[in-house]
Length: 340
Image 1 (spheres, rainbow, N blue to C red):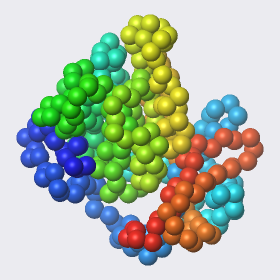
Image 2 (cartoon, rainbow, N blue to C red):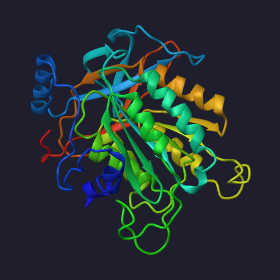
Image 3 (cartoon, one colour):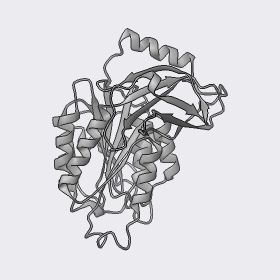
């Protein structure tokens, strides 16, 4: 059922000649074959189940990114207890896995062309040969418009094919079957599916970029579960809050997406960027995200708390000198039955 949600009609119509995988098949990774060093790292991870990787960016008091930090510059705590770092590396040129989630609900009708144009330009700038990305649209359904690729052209083509869908979900109408009342914007379902069905088998740096007004209508997934799915899979979530002010009467009655979008981005170590319906602001937002993704650090440690109890552990990173660290709020410890 879960795999069918994201591997339904979206694969059949948007893959352009690709065969749709079986709904029961595991997601297929198109990541480059790991090097011997990476294979050794994976093997170590499976034995030392509790190894935690924290991807983060650091900014000074003026909001400028701080590069060239070293292991001695930063400290990491878990549930307020200091942790011993195993490694500390600048990840400014490591492969990147991106999930682009595009809101195609009725409220986005007047801003979708702007998102398509600026989003395509961003992907053309940010994508490198070892990177990969996929594109999902969400409205009354959740559709995979483009599976993993490192081709900005294919991603742009898929993005430009996105259409507004403000209809009513129903059995047989899409990959998220519903019955009864209209289901307007399946934002939380889209996050959950992208995290658990597309990004769960990828390693290294992972980020999700969501273009939306932040409103959710009809998702089966709760916001807390969507955030948990991102955190369990070590995914940083950026939310570009873009909305047609006219649709909401100048953000008056009926608009409630800001607080939810901010919670999602803050708790996963990403950021909320509110651009309204302003083209230059949207372009600037993409440029900021590009810079942050290329100026990241990763700190790795084995927690002093060795219990495999599945609990949420709060983490903190400090790098001194009045800097601000952008990092996820915590992670879920593996349970005794986890295999990796």
